[in-house]
Length: 378
Ligand SMILES: [Zn+2]
View 1 (cartoon, helix red, strand yellow):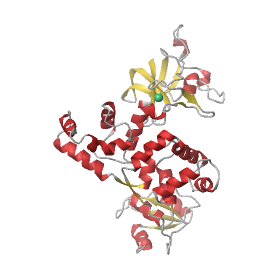
View 2 (view 1 turned 120 degrees about the vertical axis):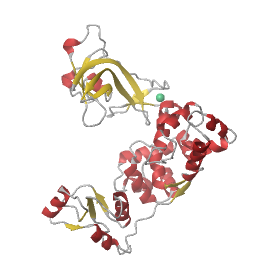
View 3 (view 1 turned 180 degrees about the vertical axis):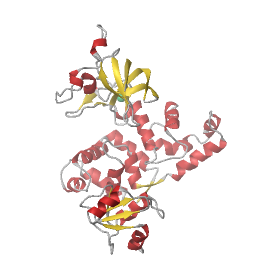
View 4 (view 1 turned 90 degrees about the horizontal axis):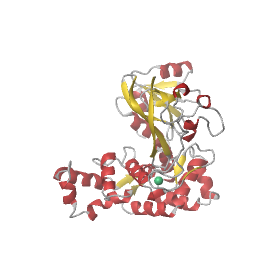
């Protein structure tokens, strides 16, 4: 914890249009690290009252110029814990949270029950477009070598890419202009060619990665996997998005019935596909891609179908991710923690508290070789 002056409050606009207030601080050392920015969470947090009228910091609001207390919890972004009213300057005014997007000027609105104010600009909002592109190329999404957040910002600023589909037409559009890229600072013949090759390599993409890469609100990596496993092909998924648009009927019921997909996620998915501009942008992207089908879980003869498995310790013959994928393909559910619902624990060297808990609960435990024997030939 440390105290410093709050010099300014600025607003960042995220991928889903969320307006996030950032505290600009007079640099101060907190836990050995110099901190000059901290999150202020949202409008209510600054005001000192949440949306239900409950007090935050005893109802004290935060104003520019305040003497504020900063803390870091773990390695996460620093936060503001408190403000000292005794040190507030008499002229300090309550902070007025913007009701328009600072990036595109569109209205920024709050949905009922949502603490976050969001820009309604969608695709015309440059902040959302850039954040969407950064998400699109991120590791769990398209993961294109040589095309990271920095390059995306640069290409967007230069008007080379405005939406994901543009990444895949970059070389065609700049065929002769590839020279332009080669001539840029930080790019040479080799790196330019490598980039175009990396882009080509990702034209073929698994369905789950594509769904995640679209950056739809509430739809994270796990949810994208679940949806991909359930519908297996883009065509089937796309059909459901169209049929479920009225948010009722068989397709809708099927979607909200997917284990792990709730109404909020389903609404977010179908409303994204129902937006004309958004949909057109997705279509342009899909036209550039070959989307790989998701293998259906093959549970024939699987001894672990329907069972809940926990992996712990170090696996030496396959990665944790691989083990998880294998188990899921064989119809098992993989959990991160041991409970009475666990059917099997696979424990590698270094297994600690989970192995002990499983033993206490009398849960069957296998080592890695035992696990490999169990699934051998499947
Ligand atoms: Zn905006």
